[in-house]
Length: 121
Image (cartoon, helix red, strand yellow):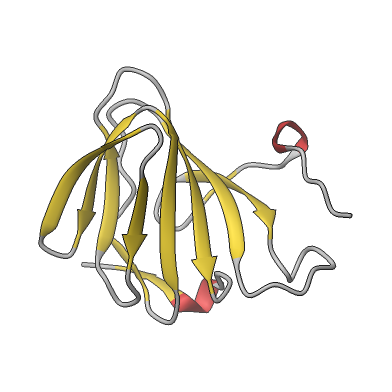
C-alpha cells in the first residue's frame, strides 16, 4: 500500500512558476501507473507561466480558491470542486484571482516528464 502525506512532501517551484510537490509518480514510487499526480499552489495575484505539455493530457482539480484558467484561446473562471481537462499540445496557464491560495491537483497521463513540458513565448 502506498500512502503519501502532503504535509511531509517537498515543494519546489516548477518551470511554469507554480509551487508544487509530486504526490505520486512512477519514477519516484514503486507503482505501476500511467499517470502522475502533483499538488500545486499559487498565491493571490500569481500566475503560472504559459506552457505546453506535448505528449500528455492533464486534468486540474481545484481544491481551494478561485482562478482564471486559460487553454489556447479560451478562458474561464474556475473554483473549488471543478475539474478542468487540458488536451495535449494546448497552451495553458492559470491565474489566482482570489484572496487566498489557489490549490489544485495536476493529474497527467502519461506521467509528467521534464522533457515533455516547455514554456511558451
